[in-house]
Amino acid sequence: MAKFHFRLATLLRLRETVRDERRLELAEAERADAKLQTRLAELGGRQRQLQSECRAAAGPGEVDVPQLVEAHQYAAALRERETKLEQERQALAVEIGGRRQAVVEADRDVQTLEKLRESQWQAHRREEERQEAKQLDEVASQTADNLLPVADALPRLG
Image 1 (cartoon, rainbow, N blue to C red):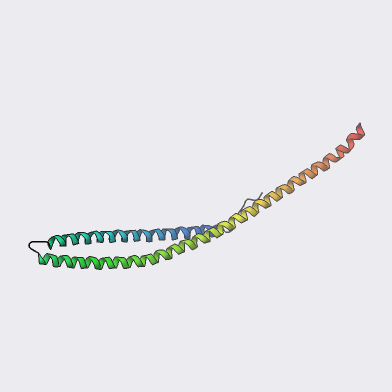
Image 2 (cartoon, rainbow, N blue to C red):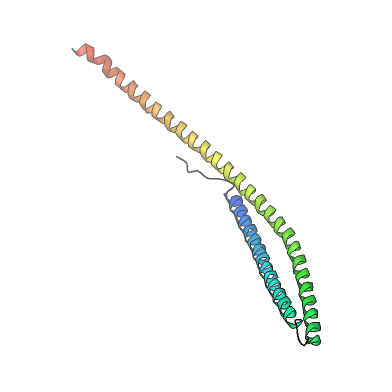
C-alpha cells in the first residue's frame, strides 16, 4: 500500500514555526509587563517608606526643613516615575493584546491544516481498506473458481 503523504506538510511546519514565534513574542511581552509591575511595586514601597520618614521628621521637636523639602522633591520624582511606568504598562497592555490575537490566529492556521491533514489521512485509510477488501474479494473469487471444478468432479468419482 502507498504510504500517506500530506502535501501541505511543509506549509504546516511553517505555520507551526510562526505560531511558536508568536508565542515567544507574547511571553516576552508578558515578562516585560511583569518587570514593570515589579518596578511599580518597588516605587510604591519607596513612597510608603518616604512618607513614614517625612511623618517622623515633621513630628514634635526640631524640624529639618531642608530635609523635608528634599523628601518632597524626591516624592514628586517618584510619582512622576510611577506615572511614566503606568503609561508604559498601558502601552504594553495594548501590545500584549495584539500579540495574543496573533497567537490565536497562528493557532487557528495550524489547527486548520492539522484538521485537513487528519481528514486526508482518514480518506487515505478508507481507500487503503477499500483496496484491501477488493484484493481479498478477488482472492476469494479466484479460490472459489478454482475449487468449483474440483467440487463438480467429486460426485462423479463416487
